[in-house]
Amino acid sequence: MSKNKARIVSVGHYLPEDRLTNPDLEKLVETNDEWIRTRTGITERRILKDPEKGTSFMAVRAAQQALDAAGVEAEKVDAIIVATVTPDYMFPATACLVQKRLGAVNAFGYDVLAACSGFVYALSTGAMMIESGRYKNVLVIGADKMSSIIDYTDRTTCIIFGDGAGAVLLQPSSDESGVIDFIQRCDGDEDELLCMKGGGSRYPASHATVDAKMHYIAQDGKTVFKKATEAMADISLEIMKRNNLTAEDVAWLVPHQANQRIIDATARRMGVGNDKVMTNIAYYGNTTAATIPLCLYDWKDKLNRGDNLILSAFGGGFTAGALFLKW
Ligand code: UT7
Image 1 (cartoon, protein in one colour):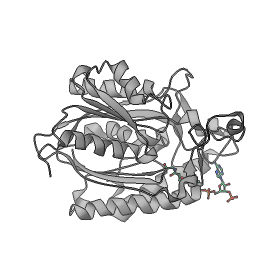
Image 2 (cartoon, helix red, strand yellow):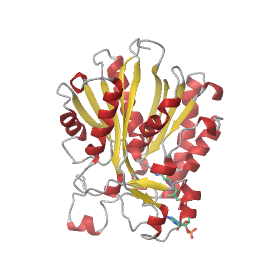
Image 3 (spheres, helix red, strand yellow):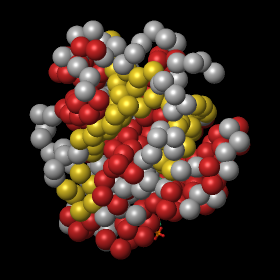
Image 4 (cartoon, helix red, strand yellow):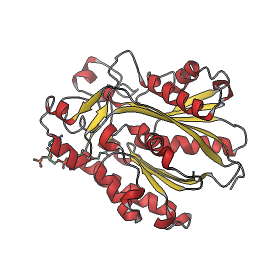
């Protein structure tokens, strides 16, 4: 392993103020608070209501907070990676908008599209940039304005997703802390099970795509649930085994927040007690690429140097990723 391990030196976040609660959803679709809580663990989500503001608005705030927490000036940033499925535009990349608004005049940047595994993929990419020795300050951001691609008449999806952003700053580590290992997979066999078909080159926006609701997220929830439960547990166990980690060695599991039942099943298979699992799905719902950095932000004051963290995610693609880091 390279001697330039990448360490998370600071974390930032942004959550819109507006809350969409389960009782609010009861007014939009045929659902109820008890069903949503017992099937998903969600009680409310944050929504970026301002139609003039896209994902970059949240990403910039999260990134600025991470820079401020580390005391690093924007011009010191070498690279910006934004994981998102809801970029402001098809192009230019959201990372370029973030670069401009931060004043990160020396940085380059691009977006990573790996749905709910996006933050893990982006973090591993950023870590390799640091490990190469070429870069010293890399911003990794997970941000999604899911409300921009949700059909609020579809009760199978609108209850799940929320908006938010989280960011970490990576620097070379001077000790044992940092990103140690990661495993990443994808399986494009069943791309129809979780997708947004409209707006790309295959189905460019047209009256027909709008009429067919192709600019909204669509999923086969039951199948995705089953696959997510298996994949997140498998990949988390695999990274533990590969690094000779027992459940006792794991200080924190940081799972993607898709469904409380998926999180519980993953922890159970790993043998990790609930007291060592970061969960905030109750308050934010599934914010796609933002769930993991939002957990890191919420838990940052409880983390101790040297804690072993396992990050684990599964999402559209299908994509999956597990990452082992020492805090
Ligand atoms: O981040 C990665 C992407 N997404 C995921 O990981 C999501 C994975 N999937 C899930 O979290 C769950 O499958 C859902 C939360 C989407 C659904 O929960 P479920 O326990 O799998 O429910 P189901 O789809 O099996 O539906 C059970 C029943 C059905 O009624 P019948 O056919 O049994 O009469 C649904 O029509 O619940 C009904 N239903 C609802 N009822 C009240 C579905 N959605 C709702 C709703 N409120 N919002």
